Amino acid sequence: MEYTLSLPMPPPAGAEPSGRTAVIVLGGDARQVAVIRALTGAGCAVYAAGLCGAAGLPEGVRLCGSLAACLRAAGETGAPEMLTLLLPLPVSRDGETVHCPLEPTAHIPLSDIADVLDSVPETRLLGGCLPADFRAELARRLGADGARTRVVDYYTLETVQVPNARITAEAAVMTAMELTDTALLGSRMAVIGYGRIGQFLARLLLAMGVSVTVCARRAESLAFARGDGCATLPLRSDGQAAGLSALAHGYDVIFNTVPAPVLGRRLLEETDPRTLILDLASAPGGVDPEASALFAAGGEGASVPAGRAGLPWHACLRIVRAPSLPGRYAPATAGNVLADAILPLITGREVAL
Image (cartoon, rainbow, N blue to C red; front, side, top):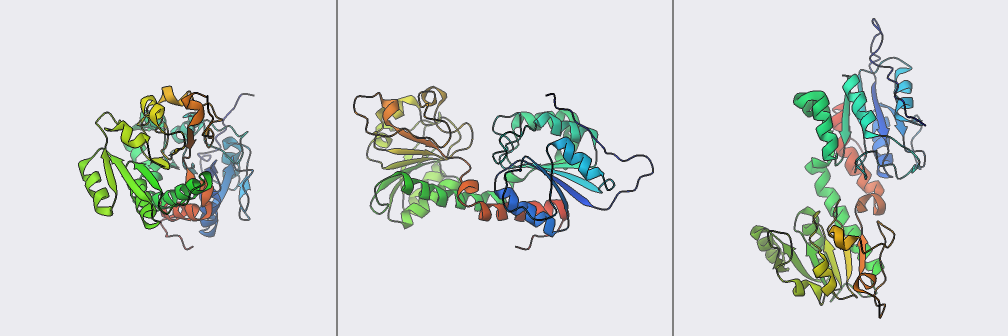
């Protein structure tokens, strides 16, 4: 069925704004529930689509079947003074539609959201990890100034990235413990990348008695890692490990946090099949496309059991894609982090949790 977009705003001539702050929440996971609670607690009128499977939504939230239905509902009691479209973190998995894991049948094209922003000047957009092509389309339609003042990628805020990295590190350790049969104390693990997530993760592992090797490109990152008590291994400018054999043998777990193909086929061919590789990076992940095509184990979150004698290397390695861990392992805490950052952007008031 063709998707049609109905825009009840701006209001007819002579109509008065209602004074309401209206927020249309589109898609997302369980973290959105905490954000919606903060919004309703602040007196916002909240309309939602792509969240029909969400549990624990507060009273007063109006669930709608589509973006168009949300717009119609928001305009029923008069035009809101300001309308905000709130997209999830991440905004999209495919670059074309809003990510709706709680309502997989929902279909909310990003192009329809661009249409709303283009047609309704009173509308703002907040989203996490906005796709580059979508940002470019918004800049083309709204102009550079309009895109800068009306579109906010809240994932770029330090108030989101820092606590999100800490939660990701905790969840990564939990995932590793679930998927291995050895204790952390005395084990040997590698962390590729020493940004926020890599730093939190390495320090957490060290505190639990793990021998940690950090692989990073920048000399200052390696210096900080050594200062934290980690062994180090440099990455070349092309992203590949300088000593492939050093990573390939003797590690119980390899964590990747770099969203670039640093885990190439050559490295994976040499890697001990008993090693668990946890790819924490956002799209496109850290396994290069050629090697990734050989791991047809069911997609995100899937792994290939190790130790199958006689099978090719790509059937023996265990590679687990594990992006967006905060939303899966600690949605309440991660949702409160988002609420802390998002509510002031919408209402100008701090959130009280």
